[in-house]
Image (spheres, rainbow, N blue to C red):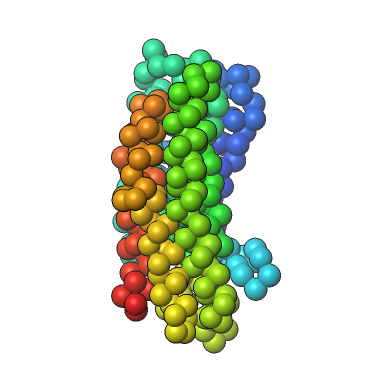
Length: 265
């Protein structure tokens, strides 16, 4: 079952990277390949939601790259995968859309974004969450400014990127607080999401504040609201996936995921 979880991450990541690298040479097959990959992710998401696997591999010294599907992820993961599939089906049928002239790049970026969301939803350690959180931000910048020939669209993507990246420093603050507090449980590293509540003294509150700031930035809440309206400069499928179903929703999801930490403060 853990193999299915890794496949749910690898499938959109590999197909997306290939399409993005091949560029116009893959335009003819890009959207069908994207729809097929998204359908595969949906099937895998349903399977892991039923099986609830957990896995971890070495990533950084004393910190693993951990993924797990619990009750919360079992609801959110299939929902995000289903929306991604519907968005790509819509994109495939929108023959007059500007992104049709660079279908491989568009589809590749959308699949890379989907892979980052899958990791975000299932991350069980801060290194995994941080890695996916940053890839999600980078791909969102590329998608919002997809029509790079138009300066105002690139500017909108840059505004979104810089605003959310500023808020994302909160996650690094939370990781630093966990390390500074020596928050590790018996046999732990201190960087597992379920270990953060073990932080001592003021570090517990610093970690919670960092998580809150990161969530507010992604969800476009005050004081980070300005980027969202500008980000609508991207293609319609991008707004549908990033701003209606996945990226903005991940801010709220992070608060739900870290509820034990927030409750402990």
